[in-house]
Amino acid sequence: MMNEAADQLTVSLTAFAVDLTSLPTPRMVLAQAVSASAQARMAIGAMRSSFMDGVSLDRY
Image 1 (spheres, rainbow, N blue to C red):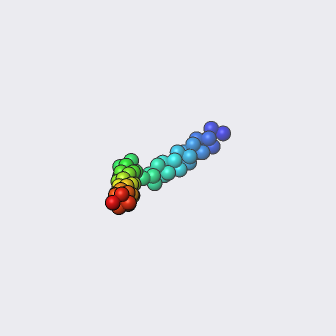
Image 2 (image 1 turned 135 degrees about the vertical axis):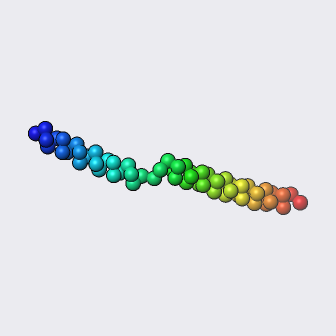
Image 3 (image 1 turned 180 degrees about the vertical axis):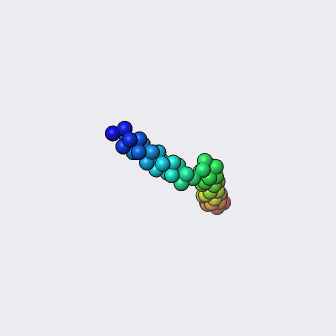
């Protein structure tokens, strides 16, 4: 009985270790987040500038 439990635990820990090694590293996750944040900032800036262009054109 104890051997079966120990074997099952070993299999579970091995599967868990394999899952962990296949996860992206924190550095990769951080780089992706920074990249997405920069893209969002650029998109917002582009929308804001085109909106302001439209507003200034309407006034004159």
